[in-house]
Image 1 (cartoon, helix red, strand yellow):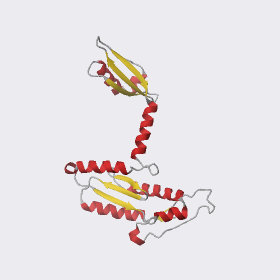
Image 2 (cartoon, rainbow, N blue to C red):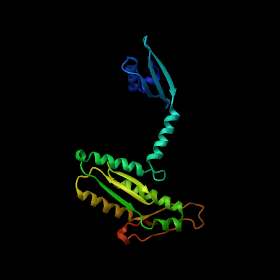
Image 3 (tube, rainbow, N blue to C red):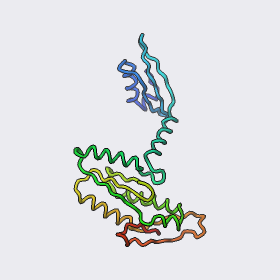
Image 4 (spheres, rainbow, N blue to C red):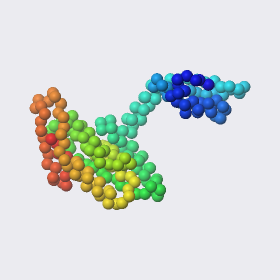
Length: 212
């Protein structure tokens, strides 16, 4: 068996390879090298003993697959889980309902967000969405999931849920946090420079974010 530097960086991978060579099974083993490359080693046992090993550098393929998975499951603007990811997480929560207990789904909608895009531009609107995402991430637990449902709509999957009051408490915290003014960094090429703009946050139970 190989005894080079690759063995030091991935001992578990080499143990898997040794098991395959011992005749337990055949197939493909993925190994990370110390040079940050991914190798796919295909083991084909021979009827007369021994095995044929095929080594392939699959680093670029793994990176491409990871990017495809990222695009399919996460929002490209905010980095939050997207609608498909949220659907899968909700299905998993429902399947584990008897084992892990109840959960809550909170929908967050930004009032009059279209007006932000129309008056201040899509760059400002995108920056506001990212700021909202950051605030939502900052107030949830590690087990909760914050996702972007689409447009100016966000979803918080509160899971597991100990008491029903926890959901109401989080909803009130979301209203309070998003009711604070937002400070957006304006592009330097805008003619009016770093303009200050504040929207009233008190109306409609402070669900509308304030810009500053």
